[in-house]
Image 1 (spheres, helix red, strand yellow):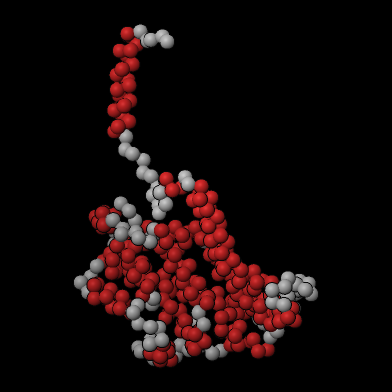
Image 2 (tube, rainbow, N blue to C red):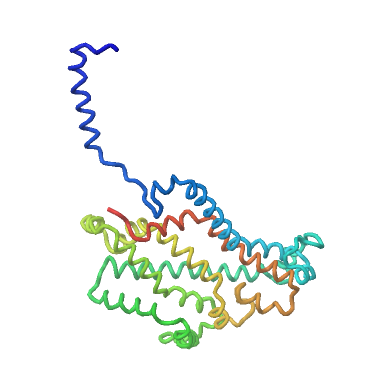
Length: 321
């Protein structure tokens, strides 16, 4: 074995010492920790058993979530006799593609879906306006009476919806100040949907986490409250706005009791109210086709905006400095 010359050993020693010092100064990389330790993961039973359990759980969740939609599609493309005789059989009489256009024309799904879309869009706009402005006042402006209003809004979450159903319905029949009747108008659905305590508190929680330095800097630059709201708060709150928007659309799409009370006119009813009403005069196959078309829209909305939704849920705690 050959040894290095003395000059090279002397030149190498400081480099080794420097490298060792840098290695000691370098912070240790964080390791992921879980219920199962690293030593247990090396055991054959855990190494092969854990992935098997994960696959079984994934299959179970997939069947529970996607299974009803697949069965609904299968029933919507089957005849009424096949649905009654063999609910789990795959098209004994063949696929009935004509059920979808028949449900669109005979059951008038297009008209009901249009009413549902109008209700959902109106509820979305009214909810975002009320929630953002209310949370802005309570979180950013912070008036003296803000804690009292926040406590009152929080207290409404502990009240069952059935308790406020009758007073709210009487309010729709005769508005306190205007004295007008909002029944058989979309305003009767839009206005109560906008005053959601949960959405206001979630929005306020997000606004509370916005660094106050940004707000104070905008005030120093001469920004008014309106400019502060439109140019700073709203652009920073896009994730939580997306979450509230998606939850509002889905909630208004599947709501049944309140539209049934305030929209007795069949021409204004949404799909959730119209389908139970027409089931007595419609074949089972067309009912299943109409149900599939009604469920398809919110599912597609969630699949399209799932990244924004999950990102907004993850950031719902606010903005980190």
